[in-house]
Every structure is written in structure tokens, then in C-alpha cells.
Image (cartoon, rainbow, N blue to C red; front, side):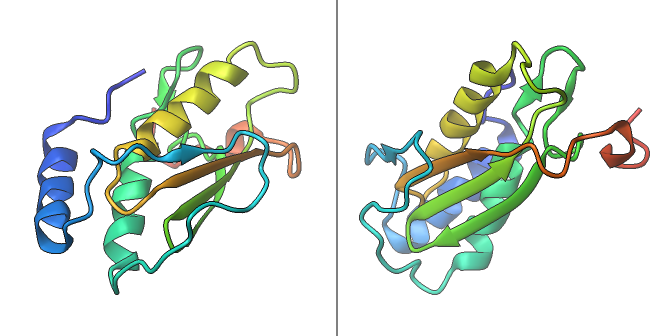
Length: 140
């Protein structure tokens, strides 16, 4: 899995961090059960910036069996930000995928690095079923 510390990501995160005083040094809560909750809070009028950073961070999570990131593969169905809570609805290529824990951990770790996100709620779903037609055109 790639690290979330790519140069563009670090620059954008640092700029956002400097602007509002919220930074990744604060340890976020991680909820693996999909239950809502957490500290909530206001996104400080910057939800577009946080969302852009969150999508960029998710783009660093690689499916090691395919070698592409989960956003390009079309495995991320939804990203919802509510205050400091990021809820990611995603799927895997097949039920019983041996990479489930690896990819879920990758999602959590990637979003932990995003300033303004304190709670990560990964939600695995099987509907709709993933198929190769979901891969972003031109990915190969």
C-alpha cells in the first residue's frame, strides 16, 4: 500500500493545517463497526477542502492483488463528511477477498492523515457487486 505522505498530499494538508489550526497530530477516533458517533463538530466552512484531501488520501489505498488504488478501481461508493466524521462506503472485488482487512486498514490509516477528520467509519457493502466495468477508464 502506498503511504499518504505523497508530496501533493503533504503540501495540501499542511496548507489546510496552517489555515485553521486543525491537524493530524490529534489522534482520531476509529470506528470499525459502522456505527455513527464521534465528536462531531464543525468543518469550519472548508468541507470542500477536507473532502478533496479525503479523496486524495483514499487514492493512496492500493488493492495489492490488482495494483491499482481503490478509487480508480471504483470500489469506493460513497464518502460522507459530517463535521469531523468521515464515513466511507466501499466494496471489495469479491466476497471473501483475503485483502479485506488490508484494504479496510488502508482506508482508516489514509483518512487519519487528513486534517479535519477525527472519526473514520469504514462501511463494507456488497451491493452493488463490483465488476471490472467500474474501473476508471484509462486506468490500464
